[in-house]
Image 1 (cartoon, rainbow, N blue to C red):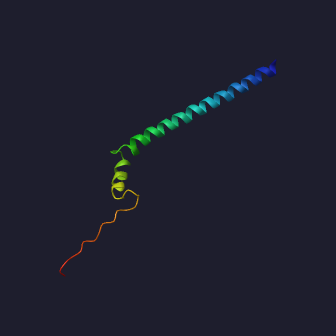
Image 2 (tube, rainbow, N blue to C red):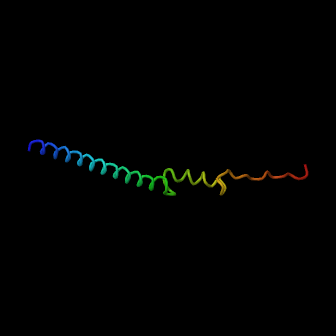
Image 3 (cartoon, rainbow, N blue to C red):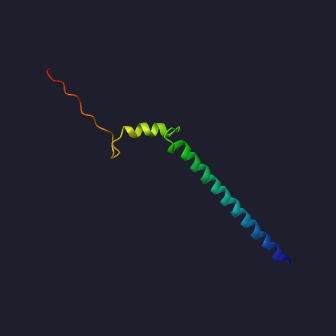
Length: 75
């Protein structure tokens, strides 16, 4: 009888730790997603502004745009 009581407490403790771990992981993922949404995905965010200005310098294939050199005539 005493052994059954000890085993059931061990199981309850394990379940409680697993539940606390799952809650902490879900809260961490939620906070990370909200920060990502606010800072990176937002075009006016702290990281979104520099990323957008960097993307304007690239062409559609992800390489830097190349501008032709102006040709001076009559030199």
